[in-house]
Length: 335
Image (cartoon, rainbow, N blue to C red; front, side, top):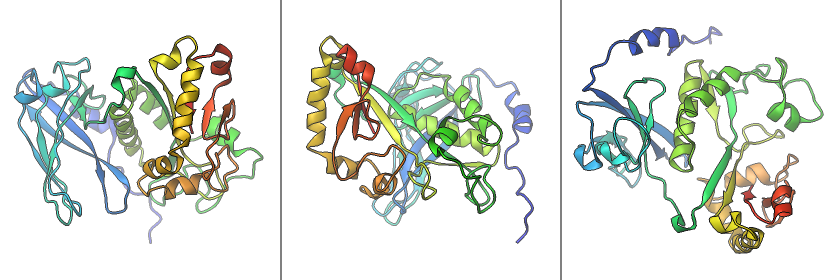
């Protein structure tokens, strides 16, 4: 097998020449970004683009569009826009329903139905990104979400961590968490171009949960693609090393108000009664991925089999930040 590196599939400078070409004011490119569950049980991000020749005012203005993503039980998928972000279309519903051809054993067609709009940082101009609907639970509670998305950068050719010796490990260090998660320096960090570019591309719009996390992951994949770098959100890609999580910081209006700590404790009590069920729902393999990340973990992982909570305890299932406990209000972190 040849050791020669694969040719670049995307060159920013090359692509920039075409992106800088004048685009008619009455033409808008729309990229539909959506999640597709594959047979391996994992969530795969997909995208499909089209050009429309008008500035839509609502979702009903746009046509349905098929796509051929097939699964064991689905033959059609729909993406329908539904939310507003600052750009020429006034709201997500301004975009057309669109089908795509993702096929499974029993599904031969999917309908893409966009629900949230984003300015496209790759095509720029009036071009937009749309994202499939994510449910907004307990809207009346005015919930705030902040997700800490962890990920690992890999060499696309061998799926081994970027910057590590081929098939080997870096020099032994005493604190992997400190070095790999927070460290700086050429011997410790690599892929910073991807991290910084992703931040700037993704930071163009405010980050919300659900649609926004999905879009953020899409942008990360697209930025890394330019440098032939793979991205994985796998919870434990390398044994005996820190895994990747997606810690959720959450609060409601009552939790943020004076005396909100009582409301936080009430919510924690409710979560404790559904611990096993939640772990099964949190990943595509009904808890197996959480088990790989949490069981036997020496890197601030909580005990998967026992629900715990505590103030400033990063080894608990639910952490209440010290500052929140001191002020008597704020948020909690689901680890």
